[in-house]
Image (cartoon, rainbow, N blue to C red; front, side):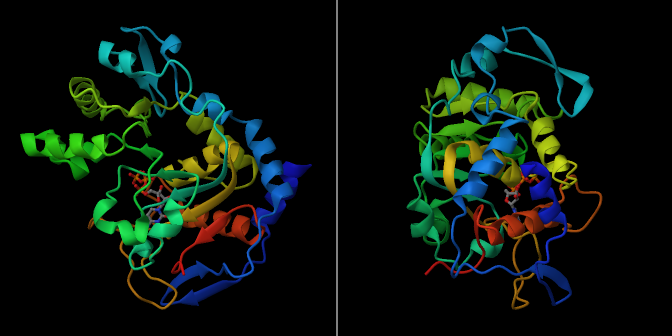
Length: 319
Ligand code: CTP
């Protein structure tokens, strides 16, 4: 029973907890780390019982017609109309169909990346996944620039692009997307009500500027399936973070997954302050129950998987 086997070890792990500066962190070493290919295959097989990332990574054109009304995934009482623009941007087939890679990087947004000098290493992977349209050019030495797949929560429009209130915000956004060329831009548009006008503006800008970026919109079942997988493995996550979603999807396409920028703690191992995001001043209440995410629990889980050779977690300098 591969699944249970994984769950027992996730829960009963004897990973060393070291307490420093008031925060519990989990020790892992990158020296001597080795991929455990049979565990990688076992995890892929188990995740496939819950979701097929090739399919669930995006709905396709034939799933809907313009004017269809759908219920939000995490707010079933509210509905969204599939607009003409949105429909025209749905891919004909999954953007990840038949795509397989030897090594992939999943880049989270923690400030732990600052001064890491991981840029080159990140860019050396065959496929690089990033989150929430995080800026790269100004941070290239630490985070790299290659972006084959990038997520964008609708809230990013407000947070990083001034809600598109003026022309320069819109230009900045169009410029950012044009740098992505034909990479995948993954927009969770069907999760909760609130971001629909942002998604519409984004869609309109992509169409108007004839941007080459390949839009994808996660399936209505993805988040439940991902949560189901982790729950079955005794990792009770209310709402998986974008980073955990990306790792879970990547298990389908990547033989070796390297994670960077995952560090949901206010201090590093030496007690030095770590920014929540490497690129802005957003504050996060790491251990609050009010937050929909349980990133410290996710981190603990990823750390166990690192120690078992299922993935490689880098939180220090890349040398
Ligand atoms: N992350 C982390 N530690 C941090 C910040 C982020 O481990 N200090 C990881 C998380 O897995 C997160 C991912 O990096 O999902 C991307 O960061 P962010 O854009 O903040 O993620 P979201 O999950 O989309 O957060 P939110 O829902 O709050 O927008």
